[in-house]
Length: 296
Image (cartoon, rainbow, N blue to C red; front, side, top):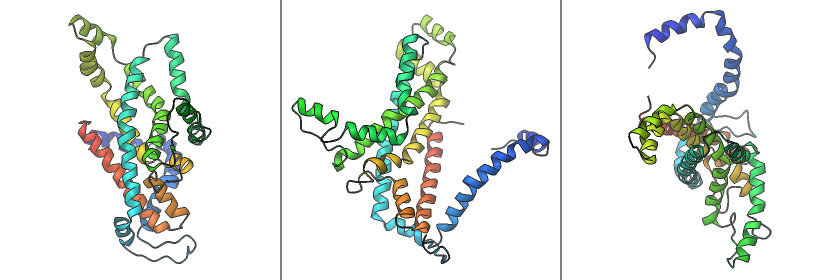
């Protein structure tokens, strides 16, 4: 809710020369975010077919009703939900654990920070191809080790039961480091006097973590939770590169399905409807997350 005092401060700023400095950013946002979003909303109510751009008819809610009856769209939504269930809790928990583990400044911790952050700076495609080779059923080092230990080789990307958890692990492995740095920066802002006072009161490690660490970095944890959740829902490159949505559609995400509808099948109207529904779901999830943690 915007307060009246904030409005009084905002209006002079808008009519001052300082507002002009925001115009380039506003122009870029309007061109690359607002305008495409408005187009997507409009196209979602049409039968726009990419190969017939001049033959567009208004179809109302037909595209949205089609989503309800599309079993492949339902599977993609379900797969995206499974990605979130597999990745989000582990990524937040492991990021918090690693941040606490290497928060103190030392040469050893500096090395570990660099090591943990290295996967994040790599291209998603590079990481995907790297793991595809590592987990290759014939020449991959993991399956070679399994064979040496007497276990059967695993079809990590061809088995419907293993493909989605495998991709989830790869995404988790690459994404932990960035969230870890955010949490670690928040940890370093906690006054040491709080922990010293807790030591004097005889608090143990769990009590200090529960009553000092977590409340002090609550805002950053909420931010990480929302970013990881929305980012996981937007997965597309990993399943596209590793499995192309297979096997049997078991790894296709909603974003990948939307992409296929718009590019492979040229159904821009239907793809736009999926985009609008997907955007509304993300907004709803972010809102619910903030309410659950009572974030003002």
